[in-house]
Length: 233
Image (tube, one colour):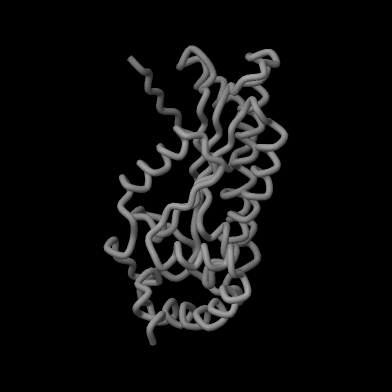
């Protein structure tokens, strides 16, 4: 039977990361071969309303904390597998579609997710073939992320988001098949991502039209993920 070990951890306290991993390794009788890094905090603020300190806090939690844990885990994993040429572990990073496209009313959050892609795309190439890196990019998913977001609290309805179990299932499939990256979302967010990826000029033109409407929706306290509130007006 598999083992379960719950270890409370403040991921912002970087000095505790190595001891926490050592404790988990001892409790599980071996270093975990799969590491999922999922911590993060979102944002519901415009650029001019967000203090610079908010950007620093978001980057510390969403980016620096994750790369600290990943580096410590990777060093320990590779030291125990002695230079084999096969895959020894898998690293799963929870990014966001906001790491693929800029997000009005979430600029610092988006920047932190873009940073994850730059770092872990490089990480994947350096560590091949011994560690596979999957970067999962969910769109709106049912969670408490809005409740704890920086900035103005907005009404958000679960009906406009992907169910949590569905997102988890698709991430698990991507992990099983050793994908490098997966986009998990409903439309229109998924459509916008594809548009910016493959027809960037058109995507940016559309973004300039929709961005101010999304900001207005935030200021009026409307659901940012109900696209009908600004997409068709």
